[in-house]
Length: 120
Length: 420
Image (cartoon, rainbow over all chains, first blue to last red; front, side, top):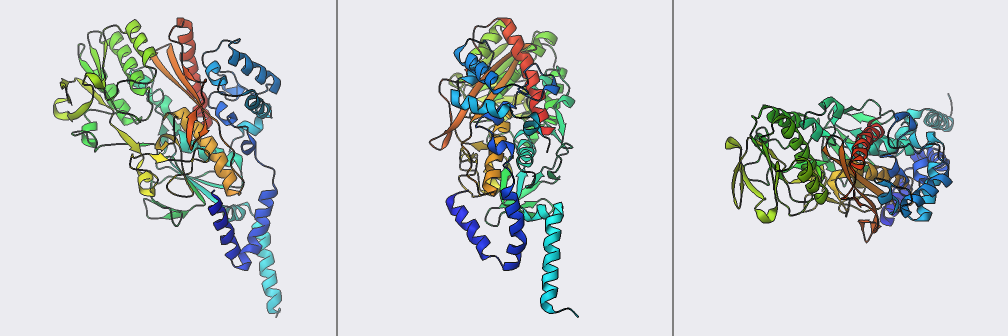
């Protein structure tokens, strides 16, 4: 949303008749007060991981990232980046992320599985 | 008789209670997001939006009952895989409202999508994921009727089976010609994976046959890897004719299966013409495609550069270095969903970071890949320097085997995430 859009949205709401405001306001406030959902909080890049790394139940040759401690993911990514750990593709991908970005992703990945693979 | 004031108060209170109590009514008061197109981009985005914010009303408009996936469809052509392995339904979409109709127009000013039956639906934000349209006006002689004789097979399904059956019916010693389009197009390594797997079929079933690639380009994705593998596995079977050697097809004649180039005519027993492409039709009608036929987007939100509140993801979008792939479409869909979910709640979107990984099979058990990491820079999705690139040119066969296995499991994982 551009700032122009934001202003327009605010103006539209301000211009509404009283009754809809009374009805809509509690709903809107309730939604805004709800805790932010998992992906909105996901570190940049984290959502892309699941294109290859799925839930453990899939039984893929590509390892699941479920249940890994953040420290472990950070260490493995560092090993991929340095070349210490051999890889087919993860070395090429790991070099695209800084230590700080990797840590943020790892912390998100370490969250409970349900938060990342919940069905709609 | 109750007083007028008491009556109004009572009605207002009971309506308010109903609004708060009933999930359906509550959902209607929330902003609605419409996603058009149920491929890798659109299906991923619709499901991701609902996962991000259960209270968001999300509608997916897709006329087909099932999606036919393009990745691995080249293996179907070569008889290595059934088309059913490419087919995915929409029965795992939970609270996403599915509308099985074609979206035919978008009124960007009034924020409404019109359906084929004349109905129209309003949106707070619209996500267009229409994929590509094959341009039947770009190559003289190549129209929809010609595609029934010289299949493009660039959308999986009936066209894939047509090309597979033509290859199966071709006598040994026949000539297969594949015409590859100029950039940009869906799946940059796709024509060359296809050439590889057709070559595998010819080598194993019709070894006196030949495959010619007529190319509108002088270079292509994973080129050195493909060429090295062709020399090793299919010596003398594949001939690649680049633009500079007269590879660009300027006209076709379906009646004689002839492909015309500036350097001469080529007669084929089986002709696979992959024509130039552009963003799917709805993008043109919504006014989000520019003169190139593709849709410029903001790299943070995927919002159109041309129309407010319309986001474009997947193959239809252009916005820098990301290739048009299923992996890119899925990654963009999730980044776009996060941005849209933030924007409808008037929160600032976060700067995304995206990944692409594309596997190609050169033969069964022989896989190669290209990867890239992308982030917004100067208004485009730019490749992060020092990262990405292709599989090593020199690698033991065990690495190729591993990448082939990863390719299969990538497909299982991503289709499970996208379609459930």
